Length: 131
Image (cartoon, rainbow, N blue to C red; front, top):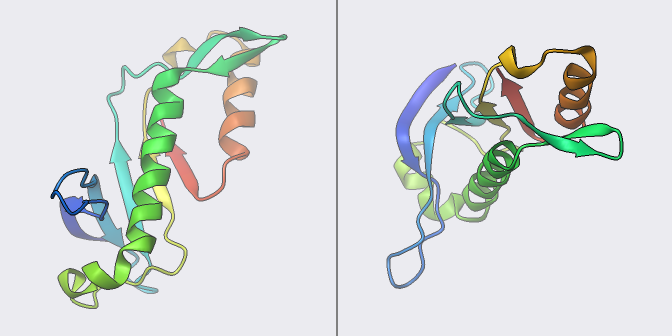
């Protein structure tokens, strides 16, 4: 992986020059040149919330990080051609995945919590997690 830019602008500004999206890192696979968006949250970010019908729900901080990363990916795809001159052909946008680095497993004090988190994370598309 190659870091293309930290705090990279990935689109989203309106005509009023507001609403721009800055991803923590824009990276590229050194071989395929496919872009990767990396969003980093604190290791103290809560991952799980309250029980919902017998299984732990995800915390709002985690679902918010996923939504934020998904929005960044959407904006990069949508605004790619307007932004491509900034990337200097060093990356492509072919289905760019996102990586969310968030939280830690210290709050998982039983197998049910690990299971709940794995069910959530493995059910997502285009988002990868590292905890």
